[in-house]
Amino acid sequence: MHLPPPLSAPLSNPASPHSEGIGRGAIASDRTAWLSVAITVSAYALIWSIAQWLSQPNLDRYHDMLESFAWSQTFDWGSFKHPPFFAWVTGAWFAFMPRTDFAFKLLGYANVAVGLLGVAVLARLAGLGRFAAPAVILLFWCLPYTTLAAKFNANAQLLSVWPWAAAALFGSLTRTGWQGLAWSTLCGLCCAAAMLSKYYSGVLLLGMFLAALAHPAARSWFASPRPWWTLAVTLAALVPHALWLQASGFAMLHYAFDQGGGQFSAAMTARFALAPFFYWAPGWLACVGVFFVAMKRRGERPSLPGLLARAWRPIGWRDSVFWLAFTPWAASLGFGLAGAVELSTPWAIPIGFAFPLLWLRNLSNASAAEAGKQLAAHGASLGITSPRLTAYVLGTVWLTSVALAIGYALTGQRDYYRATQPLAQAVVNDWRALHPKQQLGWSGGAWPDNAMLAFYGDPAIRALPGFPDSREASLAPHPSWTREHGVLLCPPLPGGNPCQLRAREWLEARGLPIAPRTIAAARSGWRFPHPIEQRLTVFEVPPHTGRALADNAGATQ
Image (cartoon, rainbow, N blue to C red; front, side, top):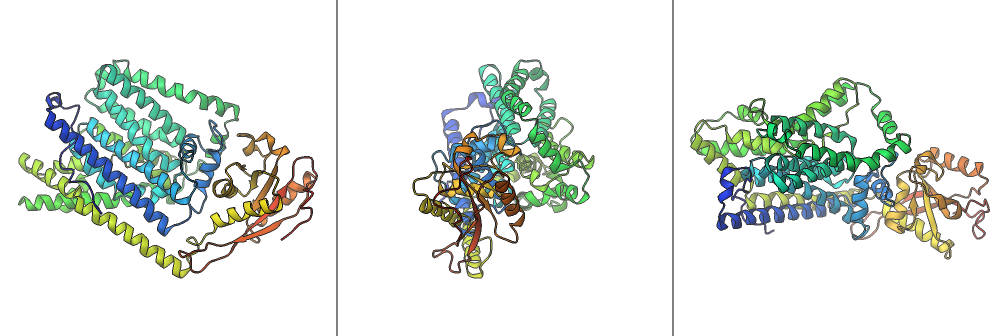
């Protein structure tokens, strides 16, 4: 695998007094460094997408990704569970990409790539431009940017939005005039996008506020129009959502309260408290290890435990990078300890985007001598951004995915053989065979499983949560359901018994025919040598006239 040359040339720092006199050679070097970052990040996203598709050919088992696709079928300012931004992104992606498992996984890693570029911009605007490339590479080693990124949902969306919001804040803090106004506008839009992705982003906004207070330019910034313009843009972008939320009876807040319960869970809180260590441990240990080796080569005698601890320390109270990195985790933990929310470990997925900048800055100052600091930092940066090391890591990822795929295929691993795609296509094909002149208008029943028909079969089929006249479905109504043919999908018995009972009761209450059919399908082809047949129960729902489909009355299979 060919990767770009070493990213040893630091990305220029616009906040530096020396940046005013950058010559053509420096500008060319800066452009080369940015190009190297972009190429490396793109290669990383593509390789991880292929690796995940090989070892896990299905979407996530909880169908979060199918749910985001279902919500993307209409443009709404909310849903009964989450704000709408990640569904908008899903809709925009599949407006030009094929509806396949690989394309969905590629969206997850493209989202990560956008976030990694945001981290590089943040480093540059925070005065840490020389650490931009190493910080990006270190995030390659961290779980939220590797194995967890394949599942694109509300938590994953924050991996791209949060770094850009933070970067735009530092751009607003360090630039004036039209550039300052542009960064402030971008900051407002990114903050709104973060809140429209997940309300949990409030902990990021708190961290950004504290970072702004701690920044050397805080006094002049707060005295300027820039922060107030940022706030105005954020609020203006959120107004349509607020109006939708009010009209919906604050449905999403009810869902959030139902999920959290306002109860203290010691186990969940402990897991969240440790999240920075087990989610980002590979990057943290790699960073410390490279600095340890670089300092040893300079003849120093560093303490490994000391370096591990130093990586997380603030440099005084006015350390804006520390507050940006630390606050989302600390604020979340505080709310959990207070019993305001029941913390969920996946909430920690987006919080660590600034951790590598904190590690790199702190460890670069670990040497006693100033010359040693510079040489150790330079040596560590070269080690972290080594194209050979990056190639080895990504090559190992790819080979591991191949080995896992072979193992799963030969041992019949259940999730590997999950037949979501062939089942969806079988249901759609069965409908078309039975009703060649009738368009299937909507799917209901098990949610969000029923969105499989739209994603894998026919995007014209509207996926509805539960039943088409339910409270959840009314928030994004499909009023033509009474004039269209639909189906209710349920898992087979015994696991699908509650779904099938509700479907039968719903149909009986409306005087509609109850004629379930069982559809079976399995994964097949050279990647699936031991097919495992899986089933779905399908209830047909004729138009609201109550008349059964003339060509299918009482049909069963």
